Image (cartoon, rainbow, N blue to C red; front, side, top):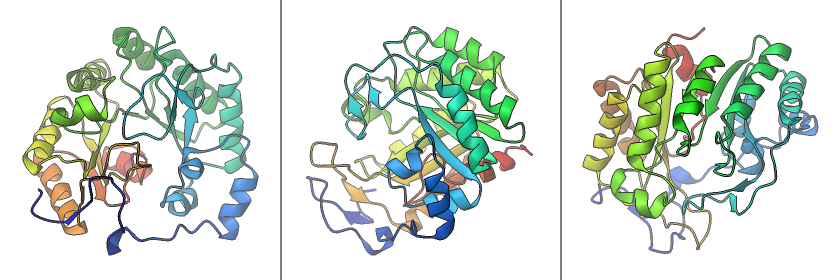
Amino acid sequence: MEKNGSKAEESGHRHLPSWLRIRVKSGSSDYRKMKERLPLPTVCEEARCPNISECFASGTATFLLMGSVCTRNCTYCNIGHGRPLPLNPAEPALLADTIRKLGLSYAVLTSVTRDDVPDGGARHFAACIRSIREVNPHCRVEILVPDFKKNMEDAVTVLSETAPDVFNHNIETVPGLFRTVRPGGRYEGSLELLKRYHEAMPGIPLKSGIMVGLGETEDELFQTFQDLRNSGVTLLSVGQYLSPGPEHAPVRRFVTPEEFERYRREALNMGFIGCAAGPFVRSSYRASELRKLAGGL
């Protein structure tokens, strides 16, 4: 994998290759109108996602739950680390109202990791799902959850009783890089969560995502694909890692669009039903389309 593509400097800061130069179309009137009506901020807006206009135009948005302070300190992530505030019991209702005002047809719910909460926030996810469905019965809900490593069994039970339309947990990287990229997590633990949920709820599409350009080899990447398939995952997202700053993990390489297409084909050959792979692909990119590939209406 080191032979192709564009190498990045060790610091993670260099001029982007041509295929990574894109202007976010945030100036459109539709986008501005939506932004003005947001009682609750979206991850799309705060992360300055390059796909924001495309997703909003398709009636999709991603929301960050349980605050903006994480109990983990992953080296790829720009979210603040520290002691979070208590969970906001009004958040599920506020979220449902935000989705109603935006007229969304598909909502992706993610969160910071809350190791300080006994169930890792599983019941908060469930409360948000119920609230959304009460107010917006036609809106599909995908959850992108942390690893729930302190009480995985309880979390799986809770989120089986109040199941989403898609259950997503990102593996993020290959096992050889876990210790440096996700020091608070375990590769085997993430696979176990996915496998447990699949065994509990085999009818719910299972999804995961991985970043590339962190120094992984192609063999490691494809083995991770296979590990995910063996755990029951049928939907996959693969995107370019971009370092948030000099204190974060550096970008080792910029993967070319042609390589991303090869990754997509390899995933489909392994039996994934849907795979979104590309320089700008993020976990929730074309989430509704991937769900439909898994048999969702």
